[in-house]
Amino acid sequence: MKKALLSALAALTLVIGGAQAAGDGEQHVTDYDFPFEGPFGRYDTMQLQRGLAIYNQVCSGCHGMEYVYFRNLTEDTGPAMPEAMIVELAKGYFVADTGLDAQPGDTRPATLSDNFPGSQVENAPDMSLLAKARAGFHGPYGTGISQLINGMGGAEYIASVLTGYTGEEKVEAGITYYENEAFPGGWIAMAPPLYGDDIEHADDAPTDLTSEAMDVAAFLMWAAEPKLNQRKAFGLTAVLFLGIFTILLFLTNRKLWYHVKHREE
Ligand code: HEC
Image 1 (spheres, rainbow, N blue to C red):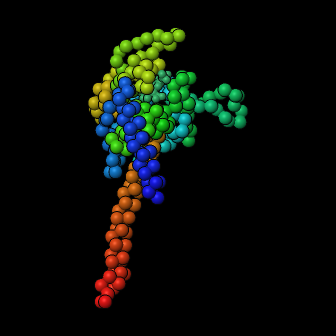
Image 2 (image 1 turned 60 degrees about the vertical axis):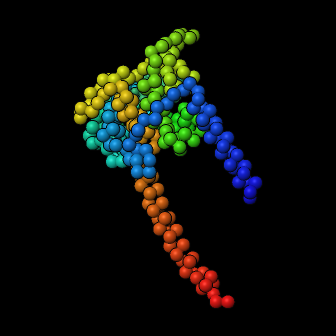
Image 3 (image 1 turned 135 degrees about the horizontal axis):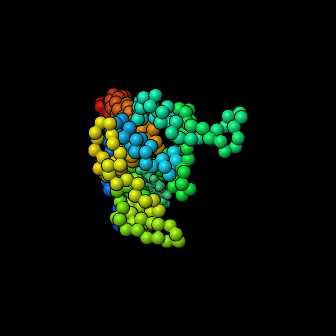
C-alpha cells in the first residue's frame, strides 16, 4: 500500500515537473478570464452570440464545425438564438444534398436539422472539438495539469493564438508562415484572421482584438462542451449532497459507538 502511494506521488511530481518544463518553452498562452471558469462559472449568452457572429463572418470561410448542428444554436444554455435567425443563418451554408433525385456532389442550403459543413480549406482543422482537444495545455502537447491548477484551457489557447501574431512572416516551400507566440513551434500557416473592428455588434460591445478573440474562443468552447452549464450545476448539487451526507454519517457513527466508547469498566 505504502509502495503504491509512493509511486503515485513520484508519478505526480513527474507530471507537474513536465507541465512546468513545458511552460518554460517559447509558447506563450495568456490566462484570460472567462465567465465559464470555476465551479460557479457559466457561459455568458451575449458573449456566445458575439462569438457566433465572428465565427460565422470570419472563421467559417476556412474552418468547419461538423459536430455542431444549427439547431444547437437555439439552445438556451448556448447562444440561445431565436430560431428564425438561425434558419436564415443556416441558409448561408451549403451541405451535401442527399435527396432522392440529387446527383453526387450536389449541394443545398443548410436547414436547422443539418450540421455545419466541414473545413473549406484542407489544412484548417475542424473547430467542433478544438477547444477541448487543446485543453491539455500547454497547447496540443501539454498535460492538462496547468488547466487544473491555473484554470487555463483550450479557450485561452485559441484566444492567445488569435492575439499572438508578432507581424513576422516567412515563406517556406511556397507556404507563408506567420510568427505566432501561442502556436506550438512559433509559426502558423493561418494569416491573422482578426485585427479588431472586424465586425459590428448590435449591442455595441467592444470589438478590439482581445474582445473579439475572447468572444470567438468562448463560442468555440461552447461548441466543444455544450453541456458545461448543466455539468457544473450537477457537480455543485453532488458536492452539496456529499457534504450533508458526510455530516450525517459522522453523527451516526458517533451515536452508534457512543456506548462502546463510554462503557464503564
Ligand atoms: C484563410 C483561412 C482561415 C481563416 C479565415 C481562419 N483560419 Fe484558423 N487556421 C487556418 C489554417 C490553414 C490553420 C492551420 C495552421 C497550421 O497548422 O499551421 C488554422 C489554424 C487555426 C488554429 C490553431 C489550431 C491548432 O491546431 O491548434 C486556431 C485556434 C484557429 N485557426 C482559429 C481560427 C479562428 C477562431 C478563426 C476566426 C476568427 C480562424 N481560425 C480563421 C485557416 C484559417
